[in-house]
Amino acid sequence: MRNIKLTLEYDGSRYDGWVKSDKGIGKKGGSICDRISEVLKEMEGTDVELIPAIRTESGVHAMKQVACFKSNSGKSPLEIKQYLNRYLPRDIAVLSADYAEERFHPAFNAKGFVFEYHLTVGEVPSVFERKYNHYCFKKLDIEAMKRAAALLKGKHDFKAFSDNPRMKKSTIRDISDITIYDAGNEVSVTMEADDFWPNMARIIVALLVSIGHHENEPEIINRIFESGDRSLNPEAIEPKGLFLSDVIYEK
Image (cartoon, rainbow, N blue to C red; front, side, top):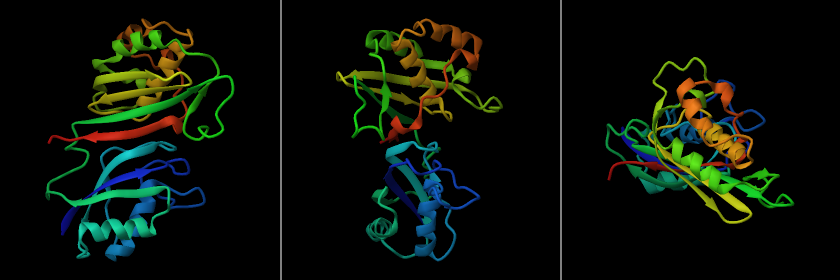
């Protein structure tokens, strides 16, 4: 059995996130894992466990997701890549397939993850960006958002940035960088951290947008960290603007 590492990109619009579902593919499309596992099962002739670097949520996209599985098909990595791209739907693509060390685990070996969120600001929402950008009806105060982003950086307890109140694992995470890029009618927020909890990235962006709209002051972040109170944060922003853009490993 060989450990095969896949690098993937996908449009998550019609999928229920990464997690393998009990309901199967269904009308909407099931999960990303459902779709890829279905093709791998045909290739391998048996059920395959497909392990991701991180589980993206429903409607979230990936420019670079990493996953691995054990193969006994005898196909080379190039043949595996070609087989998957032939039979997968066009909104999922295998960018590369490679041999990995037997003990390689895409999640446990990852040192960090990068997510980016795309926003559009303008008088009229763009017809062509509506599927992948969140539209802001009011102009954003970018400088206020940058002051807030600086307060989010570093190692903190992000309990208030999760929608799972029964979180049993440590909620302390280390955000090494948050960059806000303003291109006029387009704004992007890029976040790099050692890990992200479900909805964490979207809650962070929602808070930054509320600060950009002067609904909150940047200093509210200190109160949120001190209290751990989820109610001080807004609801998670819609998933369509969020992309997993990189998974970081040691070289």
